[in-house]
Every structure is written in C-alpha cells, then in structure tokens.
Length: 81
Image (tube, rainbow, N blue to C red; front, top):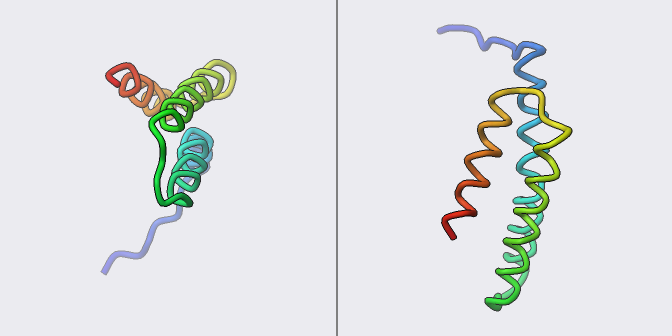
C-alpha cells in the first residue's frame, strides 16, 4: 500500500483559487436549495449574478492556468443558456 502523498505548495495554491471560483456557485446552490419552489425570474437573476461574479474573478485574481480554464469553461456554459 502506498502512503498518501502530501499536496505541494503549488497544488494548495490551485485548490485555493478553485475554491474562489466555486464559492459563488455554492452560495447559489444554498439559495436555491433553501426554497421549495424557485421562480424563473430568480433563476435568471442568479445566472446573471454568477456570470458577473465569474467575470470579476477572472480579471485580477487568477494566476493558475487550471483555475483560469475552469472559469473559462463555466463562462462558456453560461453562454449556451
């Protein structure tokens, strides 16, 4: 059995950036899960909020390519809606 390897400093940095990217999605998931019914207007507002939040995160914050790719793919997914 192989011992568990510790994460490198770079890997921790990537995970911290990914957590920043996913935090708004967690907030929206919590918001939607708290209600028994969610109106279409609320979904539209939450989608716009996520899109705006992702764009704000992308500009100054992300240094790692993995985080940038994740955010780019999420934004591309919004464009398909």
